[in-house]
Length: 88
Image (cartoon, rainbow, N blue to C red):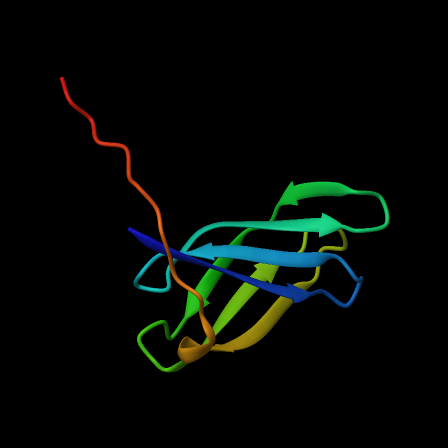
């Protein structure tokens, strides 16, 4: 499975990040308070992931703001990750 990671900054200066799958759906989101070095989960979702230009929305856990940012598909760097298979 290929994954890409995107980053942005909230108005409160927390660094927002999200890991996307090949369909540009969010697998996980997080925020880092660079001043304190704290990282917390940040709910995130993709909007219009089938388009060349799509948006990600985060709920910043540091300040409570809803943050929306636009990204270009052509600007994503995809990295191959192995998926764990269940055998039994």
